Amino acid sequence: MDLSSSLPAFVLAVVLISASPGPAMALILRRAALRGFSGAVPTVLGLEAGLYLWALLAAAGLAALVAASEVAFLVLRVVGAAFLLYLGIKTWRSAWRSRGTGGAAEEVAAGEPERGSALTWWRAFGEGSVVMLANPKAAAFMIAFYPQFVPVDRPLFATTALLAVLQVAIETVLYLALAAAVGRAGAWFRRPVIRRRLDAVSGTVLVALGLRMAAESR
Image (tube, rainbow, N blue to C red):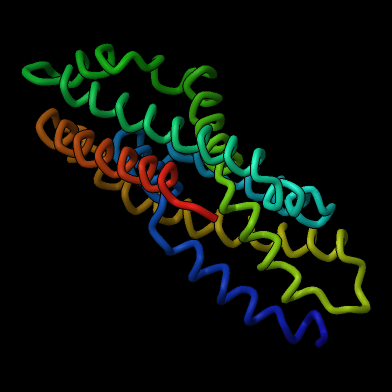
């Protein structure tokens, strides 16, 4: 199989994977709704940085070791589930504290830095990276996904790295387009009542995803 002939199937697979619901989608939607397009950018970049690192680890064979090791798989699963639960509970607390307060008070109650600050940017980037890197299913997925599109006469690491760049580019465009669409309605989402409901729903989704990750096996 030639690499160029497999690209259409690869692109289609990436688009379908990107559109599937999960922790990444939940983070991006909430961030874009409450912080606008610019607030969602670091979350998207953090997620894609984690994805690209997993792709490189898969190409180097390290992801296979993680997926094969019971201890490493369990540790990643526990860390990933705990972090999703932490994000979900923090979001619930934001919804609880915002009862009866205005929009400005909500920001303080949520305990978040001022919008646009470097700390806010890196916190969002870090959340995205940790959510992706602490997901053991990402390691197993990379091991199974990329070899299907790497021709036998091509170097595995270099070709995987190239395909991963393409996947990151596609997902970044799709996720940023989603963030831009949601961000257009940002003023509506940031209304106190709407924000409180959004936090409650987002927290429930994140907690449910965390519990599912903690309970699922290989």
